[in-house]
Length: 377
Image (cartoon, rainbow, N blue to C red; front, side):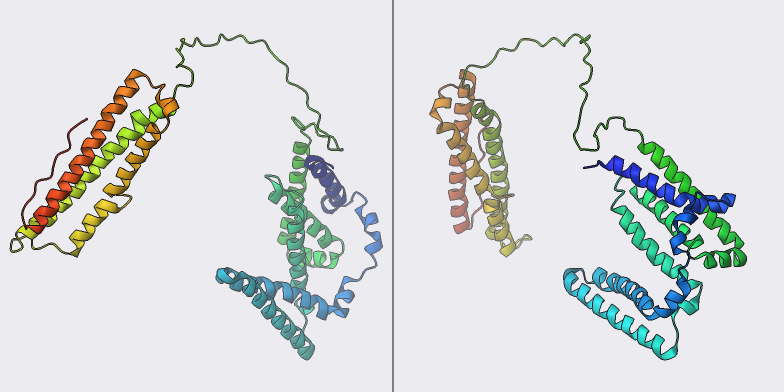
């Protein structure tokens, strides 16, 4: 398999050989024998061929134009039904194409009568097809610009050789436009030359035509820098439960602190309800459904609720206690920390239960209530 860079260079060389005459003939009055290459096509009469098959050629052009417009309208607008939109766009394009062909047959009109506009339309359609075809070959970072330059030179070559009558008409009718066309060909030609020479740089690419890669190992140089001095680290004992130590010093206390925070918010909402219920005639008014919904939210919701984080703290506690092999290896510091937080955990649950009982009794008795405070660990 030929690699992409080799294919790129071969395509450039072939294109430059075939197209150089298009530019040199215009600039210097003589070419690189492209005329001899195209000699078999010298007897082709494009005008008579078009007049003979004008209906078919016009139908192809109409279909391309109408299909493009229909795709733009239906497929772009109806994105949720692309398959149906494509079918509708094809049907509409065929209907409009048939209508235009019948119109030409009834009126005697054909696109050739728009000469030289018809040839420009034909070359424009051909340019679009060539550009999209070349994009599949040149896929690099500058693939679009290379494809555009190739397309321009090919169309310009057709413009001055098979369609030389059109070229002569442009030179006579619009000499400035003819100069711009020549300038564009020169720029495209020079740009392709530059890209070809840039592609000849095989630095780092040693892939032969057969596809086998041969790599040259880099030269090794002796190290001249002194490695940094790493202070000695006393390793932990074998099989030391680092995961349990992390749970004890991070996850477990984080869950307990979060439980205290959510308990405080929950209790404050309970006090709001108790205050309104104790004095319904006061400025606060009696509790409403929103107050109770807020209380349930602060108790059960996963984001703000007290119950989910309490369940998570219990889950972490179970993980630590249910691994006796690693638990037995914990050092004295981690064991003391774990016992301290476990006692705090019990105190938190006791305070929450007692506060819940007192708050509900106060609610039933229409009395005020002061939230119990959780002691520090």
